[in-house]
Length: 374
Image (cartoon, rainbow, N blue to C red; front, top):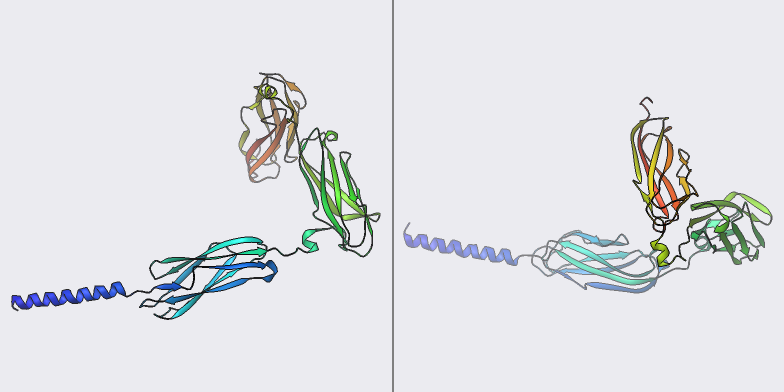
């Protein structure tokens, strides 16, 4: 073959290569969406799931494939055309929003993955859900009696933090859903607690309040405490239901001056954790938490309590003043009993140190029931 023929052949091959490359560069799908976002506007929660169809057009020259769509939250569900969309044809992306228990404004995204360029497109849906009116059962979740005639907002009246020097008041809504008047009272109420219904007798369909007063000056406990009381309806004690009262009794440091705080006691522990390692079952181990009063005034251990009866705290320092610079310790006895594997127990210590008024001491052990006690 002559050199001219070879040259012509190379030119032809180059020409077709350029043509093929050009075709490959041009041949691709192009996704065009009817709009990038949709606003549902305001709608009621009880209207249920809302949906909108984004229309997808393939303006390219090869089939468009929607490979996946990822929603920004579980409240939004996408549906889409699964088969390839031919050039010039349309598909759709349906965005479904569930407003149940989601009142208020929302702004969610759908990330659409395709074989087009760019590979990811983002669609937005937004709107505002007008909350539905809650039912009596949702507003008053605790039925006191078996007939569910009287309902409280909850079976738990929480006073949260209560200073040891104060009386704190809490209220809770109640309702009589029956067609007869109901007189409400309480039994087993401790001396530091006062409970009454206002009004004491609820007319049919009437709402009222439980008014509770917690007098922390009459309770010698510290930290988290709770009581159970019984509800009395029309003179009949409701023995199958209990009303729980809780509070966290704390030291009152609100009246301390800057100088008082600077001269306050300091509860300084050598360590807040003791690890007993591996121990047999039904074994008692004594542990000791050493501490020093690193402050400038007497340190008082107000109260010590453990998480369960298996940890017996020796409270020999409770209520006693520990002088500045003086050291002491808190001892406890851990009984491994029938525990198995890793066990963690907590001991709560309450002091008059403003920065360490509640300290948690941890006791760790790994109990092996198959090991013999030595």
